[in-house]
Image (tube, rainbow, N blue to C red; front, side, top):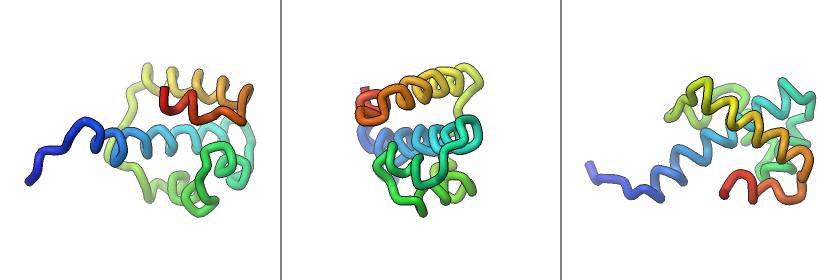
Length: 90
C-alpha cells in the first residue's frame, strides 16, 4: 500500500474528523439546525447528517483534551460565522 503524504492524511482524515466533531457540537450543544451547521461549514445538509449518524469520518477519534480544543474553536466560529474557515484551517 502506498504511503500517504501528510497533506493526504489531513484532507482524507483530519479535516473530516474536525467537521464531524464541529457538526456534533453545533447541533447537540448549541442547538443549531443541520442547515445552519452546513452553512457555517460550507457543506451540504446531507453531509452534516452523515457526520451526525457516524457514517463519515470514523478514521480519527479525538482525545478529551483535543475535544476541548475543538469545542473552544466551535465557540470562536459561532462568534465569527462568516470566517469559519480561518478557525478550521489555521
